[in-house]
Amino acid sequence: MSNFSVLFSIKIGGPSQNYLILSKALESIFSKIHTENFEILISYETTNAEMVAYIEGLKNSRIIKNRVTDYSWYNWMIKSSEHAKNFDYLYLMHDDIFFLTNNFDQIVHDTVKNFDEIGIINLKDMLYEDGYFKTQFRWGFFIDAIYEDTWSKGLLGEFHKQKPYWHFKNSKFKRILARLNLTKINTLKNLSFKYNFDEKKMAFPTSVISTHGGWNDLMIFKKPNLSVFNNICDFQVPYGLNSDEDIILESLKMGLKNIFIPNVSYKSNYEYNFITTRSFGMHAKNRDNVKKIFIDKWGFDIPIKMDLDEK
Image (cartoon, rainbow, N blue to C red):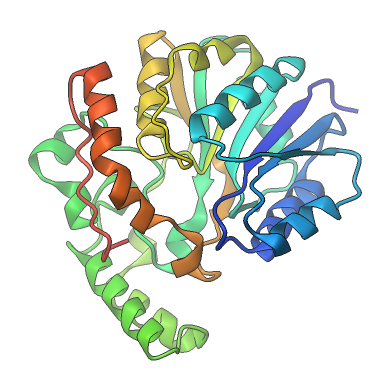
């Protein structure tokens, strides 16, 4: 039996979420995990009757059900970090990801167990296999992001050898398929992706590296450094808009190293009903308020240039 413990904390999204997505996430934990010392904390709203029925019907003793109302992303992170004080690791995760690597928790533990100054741990998201431009890393203050606009061109991070703007062409084709109700035909769905994108030109690190930070689909924290949550912003929204960059900066401000582990993989489940499982419309409504809170704290804005059509 492993001598470390893990808390997985999952926040369920709005009324358009689907219990099949959550079931895939849970199945991946139970089938891929190594340690027997773990619990899964699920925080869920009451607005989706099918999702509520599924969660409340779960009988596994490792699953803790936290039924909430108007639960902000901030409250979720704070409550998760408080609960995680009884565990060695906290995995904050979306409900629409699933693990791919066997014994992923043991690999993470073996990688970081002898290092104290570890802030946020990020793993490899295989979403690029489905033709989406989502880098493993945030752009931070790197020269290529600032001066060459690599984010808008789809050339940030591991995508830097691709054709400029490949992602625009691919997302446009996906939208056309969606309007024609042809998204379930994999041959058509992959056609534009294969034409605009070269998987052989993807460039990933082969060992653990320090990063500015990653995304909040999955963020892992060691117990000794849960104090990173003490000064995070309350953006007063139910989703993680700007919160990932905020906690990244808090971690770096504390002198911690945010790291990327390339040999442990998961995948964001975008391909399952992409339109209804993401909250881009709601994000747009709250972006100005969130932006002001962030600027008031840090003194600068995040250079987010992705528009809704691209997403």
